[in-house]
Length: 348
Ligand code: TXA
Ligand code: MG
Image (cartoon, rainbow, N blue to C red; front, side, top):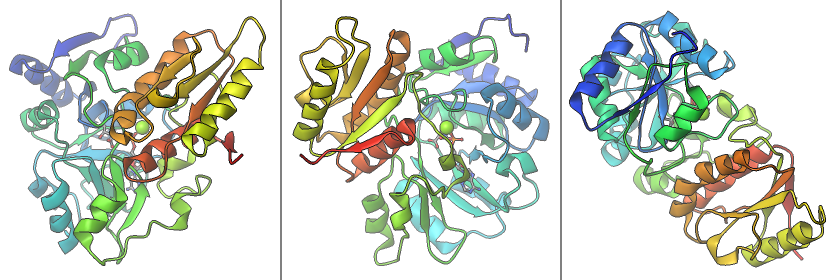
């Protein structure tokens, strides 16, 4: 579409708006829609040229495959060579929801969807507007997060509007995302299920269902330099100013940040921090994102908080990193990815 046309935000609770967006998909166009994790930028997953627009609109690297969204588990049948037994076990426990499953793909999927891989990532989202859109459209929907590559994912319709205004016709507004971080990507194409990207469904959630079946959390999940999912190798989720991830007990990381904020920049202080509610410094340049042990709140608020820094005239950001347990593992992963190499471990 022409770059000068304003993108319209539509109320996802009105069925005629779902129909309008389904029509755009039918014509080979793109629409942004809510899911419970983050907003997605959708296209017909079976239409190579529609999918290629996703890559240009986001500025996404072509070697980074997309997640295909379905409205029922049965739709996966035509997309994968065979459905492993563990698929149904996981679907029963987590679908619809924040779990993406990677399996061997069939040839009906265009190459650009999977970036040439022989596997496909599929997910049935929980958000009613996402399900209604896919159902009304009638085919699977390929959708990455609806942000330009590298930026924090959108968790509100206005985030998408500020990122993609003029580049897509419509954004379906289904409210703020309930989970706030992307889905967990789990590879079940081999003998042993393997988490490729931590997300809204936690390692222990999956472990409790698969029992003593081994999940390869591979020490490598902690090693952010080693990509498991193609998308994990890029710097991601990043505000414009450089961010330093500060790891350690919250009282220690708060002290570290305090020492650095009050001693830098003098009067025109351009150093800011992302801190837990219960450790936030009494300083004007602090944005909070939940209590130190409330990982759910941190997940919901993280990307919105990171985006707020882009509206501030600042030089650098410090961020407290939560304990790597439960959903805290995912929140920590996103902050460390945003920080790139700039990670400090505090243990004084
Ligand atoms: O919650 C989510 O997953 C959101 C919503 C919109 O569903 N989507 C999302 O998509 O986060 P995206 O494109 O931002 O991230 C997809 C991730 C990337 O890390 C990509 O490399 C990985 O999934 N992925 C996709 N297909 C894959 C495959 N066949 N094998 C391994 N990883 C794959
Ligand atoms: Mg993304």
